[in-house]
Image (cartoon, rainbow, N blue to C red; front, side, top):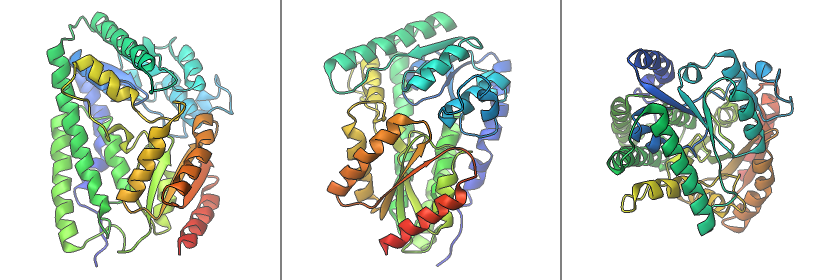
Length: 384
């Protein structure tokens, strides 16, 4: 068989640098930009306000030293990187944002936002502690409505039901497209590497021409169809199949994925926040728009929710459907919610399919790469 990379990936290699250039041009043309750090921020509401939603930089080691001038050194690297990028103006997406939307997913981010609010207009959405009860849903709906009112005031826009419905349809179509793309990694040989899938998912958070993004993903899907038919893969047939879960893992902080694939295994699914988690469910188009948006985002199976059975069920379901040989759970040092939940996930996978599980606690540095490599190699050898 032929081992090769999909040619259509060349576009996504340059997607984020191109996005930075496009954003500068959009700002010069008068566009309004809403920056967000988390997938709990409802992008439909920003779109309905006539603004461009964009993810903010948070996954590189270089700005952490600047973040540590204000934040404790034992903080999660994602928080320190986020703040370091912001305070140095090294993130063009933060620099050009008219409003930053934060959220109360962890105590560290809440306190970081207090410092960040001195730099930019910033709004923090207050999450409930659970997604299970009617009280939780009512609390979050009020938070989404508060964001809607703020965006209307900030941008002088009227967010109508019609605009919300149009935004819902646009993003639902995008979610279905990403689901279609992700299904190709069910094949053996796997036609698309996990690192390339991450690059596509990450680029999606930074693109502004959604029509062009859709066209490029469709071109890749057509190429993958040909690759599957020809038996072409990014890995040899029979390579171990790994599902990755845990903390947000974006470009610049993908070292664990790289180690896994350098060891010869295929990352067939990235469940993490920066991965497929945001695409697995749709906004219900049969319900009132704002309520449906709130319901979809509150259902996000993040470890900040307690208890969090949806994550356990989702990872186990994905492991079955993608025929995973094992699950690797990545946790950043200082991320206590995901770290505590690791034991819960390990036990759940053991009881539901006896899925091999590996917990890796790390940070953004490269100092532990060889140690991680040794553990991954042992994990793969254990599978036989």
